[in-house]
Length: 119
Picture 1: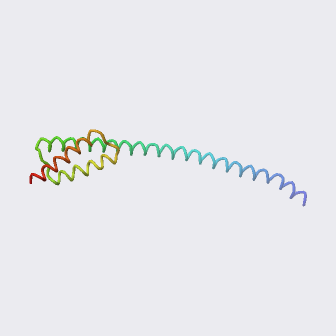
Picture 2 (picture 1 turned 60 degrees about the vertical axis):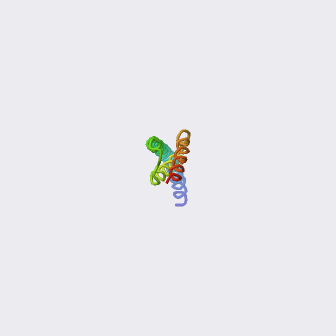
Picture 3 (picture 1 turned 90 degrees about the vertical axis):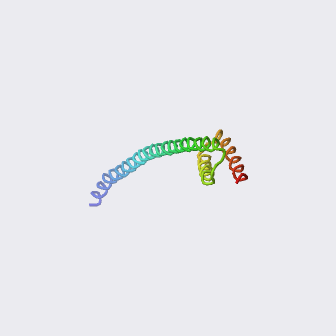
């Protein structure tokens, strides 16, 4: 009986250990595949956010240019439009925009100060 248990033990133990090793290897493969899928999803989401940010920035720039042209031609800017311009500029700047729009903002600032003094 004792020999039977020892023989059974020597046969069953390697099988069980092999199965455990196989399970661990499969788990490791799945974790790698999941990581690859996750990294691809994160990359696509990042690209989508960047595209959305760039599109938003471009739309803001167009609207800021329109405001600038409109109110510079008029020679004055109403307070609500001035506030809108500043809020759009802040959002545009937060998205990374700068350059020519900053120059336009400075011109709008002067226009707003002049129109306030004229009132």
